[in-house]
Amino acid sequence: MNPLTRLVLLLVAAAGGLVVALLGALQLLAPGVVADGVPPSLLAAWIGMPAAGAVAIAAGLAALAVAAVALRERRSVTSRRMRTMLTLMALVVALVVSTLTPGGTIPVAGYSFVLVLAAGVVATLVLLVIRRPVVGLVVVAAVAGGVVLVSLRLPTGLFAQMVVGGLAPRMPFLMIALAHLVTAGALVAWTVGAPPTAGRFDAWALRHRRPVTVAAALCALPYVALRASWLTPWPLFGPADVAEHPDVLLTGLLLGCAMLTGGLLTLLLALPWADRFPRWLGLVGGRAVPVALAVIPASVVGVLFTAGGIELVVATAGSLGVLEVTLVFPFWLWGPLLVQATRGYALHRAASADTTAAPSERMPRPPASTISEAA
Image (cartoon, rainbow, N blue to C red):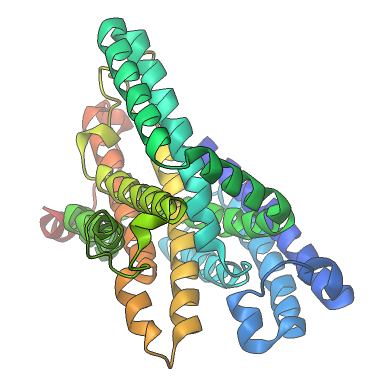
């Protein structure tokens, strides 16, 4: 990831830290303002709202401090120990900020992603029509026909109204959650997109990036399989008469498609399309994918999945439901694996760029022992 993007991430983290600290101060001084309609965070449910407000102030100021130190260190040659300390501090602060995110973000994120997915499909179809008009128009007609067919059998209009109507009243909650996720995500993305080091961790991440990416993508399968079972006479983890409730069926299937798409996008980090756009896309086909285009969204989603996954497990701890949540919704595992896979992707892109650069522009090579480990 280029230095300018990492600079922007530090500025975003600093601004987000100020917002998080301000929200923490409001929790202490005027708790009704922030708590009204906003579910408590994982940390607030554990230690209480006033204490969580104090932690939020400290975490927000810590994010600002990490960004300030990192910005100052950019102007000088820093030691490997200082870079390691900054990395660890950024990850710790990101973890604390993520635990301050209001609860219930995973379901809301699922509904939001359905809308994003629809927009992504439209954008892809437009780019396909620009590059290959005949094939693109045929695909557009097929997709439109599929949508019409589904609309005739399932209440898609009702689902759209339910999603939009459900999200609109929760905008304050969404804004607060977004502030925390962006702050933590910016710190994680700044860390994940850092230049390669000669350390053993980066060597391991580069060497095992494909199996780690596949493992992360497989985390989507349990939920997808359960929702696919709703199309059979034996629906799992759903009402026995789900076929008689088209609105419930449509909601489950769309969320299953969103989860499947998330798994495919995760797997994409280990495929060539994450290096270069497919040639059948207009305007961008064949061009190198900006590293930040993959690293930043994956880092934010990794933070969301980690915090949301831990929240789901903690909320059901001590009951039989914890086994269902742990296995069917493995966000607690998907999030850390996604961050690790993203680091491997960033290292892979850096290595690819290094091999095509002029000898004078190449980064210093790590010791031979580390190279042998990453081979």
